[in-house]
Picture (cartoon, rainbow, N blue to C red):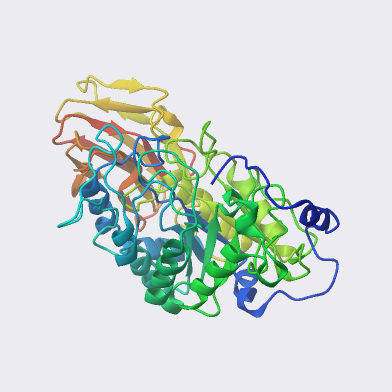
Length: 497
C-alpha cells in the first residue's frame, strides 16, 4: 500500500472517469462471480510481510530462518476458529510486497530470485542450495494451508500481490518492472496450485507501470491487466479480481478485468449510494472500500501497523461497515497481527464488535469484555517485585505502555466478576514462564517466550470463559526469564473498582 500515488491514466480516460459517478444509478446487478462478496458484507486483510531494513518493512525480519519459523509456526486452525467467532467472511492475505520474502512456496520465484543483498540490508539472507540466488520462499505454503482451514468455516481467502516484481528485493529501491515470468508464470503457478481454494486476487501497483505498459493499441489496450487476469483464471475461472490504479479513482476501476473496486482509502470508506459501480469503461462491478484500522506512521500509513494503536473507536468502525453493507457495498478492514499469526487483543475486541453490529456473528466472547490496562488501579502489583512502569514503548502494547519485573516470584493480582478472564502481554526472547492462578488454584505454567527475535505484542497467554458467576481473582507469578511484562487483562465490565 502507498499513502499517495501519481495517477498515470491517459487524459482521455481521465475525462471518462470524471463523467462517471463512483456508484451506479442504474439497477444493474454485479457480476455473478462477485455476488458472494456483497452477501459477505465485510472482511479483513492482513499485511503479513517481512523484509530488509530498507524502508523499514512492516516486520523488520531479515533472517530467512526466523521468517521460515514464523510461517511454519502459524497455527491456521486456531486462526480459523477465531475467524468464525469474529464474524468476517473473507480474508485478503499477502503473498509478498516488494521486499522479497513470500508466505508461499514457488519454484518459479526461486528460479528468478536475485543474489542476496548486502549483509547490512539483509543480514539473515541465505542462498538456495547449489546457487548464489537468495532463498525468499519458505518451506510451507501458508497461503494454501490458511485457505483450506478457512474454507472449513465457509470463509474465503483472497490473495494480495503487487502486479509488478518487488522493487526492493535486491536491497536497492528501483523502478518496478513487469516481467512475463512474474505476471504470467509465477501468478499462473500459484493460481493453478491453489485452484478454487483461492477466491480471488487484489493486485497492487498497476499505477506504477508506464502508460505504454497500461494502454496500447485498441486491439490490446491493457496488456498487464489482461495477462494478470488470464493467469489468475487459469486456476479459478470464477476468481474475483481488482487491479489497483491509485487512490484518486479507487472506486471506479480503469481496467477491463476488475470485477470489484480496489477501494483504498486513508479514512473509513464513504457510504455508497449503491453496491453496483459503473466503471470508466462502462462495465459494472462490486463497490468495495478498503482501509486500515491502525494509526498511521510516516511511511506506510496504517497498513499492517502492529506497533501502532487503533485509529478508531469500535463503534465508529462497526457503524460505518454496517451502513456500507446496507447500501450493498463491501468493506475490507486491514488488521495487524503478530508474525506468529496471533491476534492483538484490542483488535479481537474491535473486529468482533463489527461482526456483532453487522449481524454476521452472535458470538460475544471478546466484544463484551473490557480491556483493563496495566496502569489501572484494579491491577495490584506485589511489593517485592521492583516493578518498573514503561511508557511510550512504540512496540504495540495496549496504550503503548507496560509494567515489568525481573524478580522471580513477583506477581500481580486482579479482582473481577463474571465468567471470563483473559491475560495478554508481549512475548519476547528474554522472557520465560509464568504461573497463572484463578481463585488461588493454579491453572498451569504458561510461556511468554518467543524464541525468535521479533516481539509478539498483546498476545493471549491465558483465557478462561466458563467460570462460575460471581467474584474471582486472577494472579500471575513470574517463574523464569529475564523479565515478565504486564500489559492488559480483559474481563466483563463490572462494578469492581
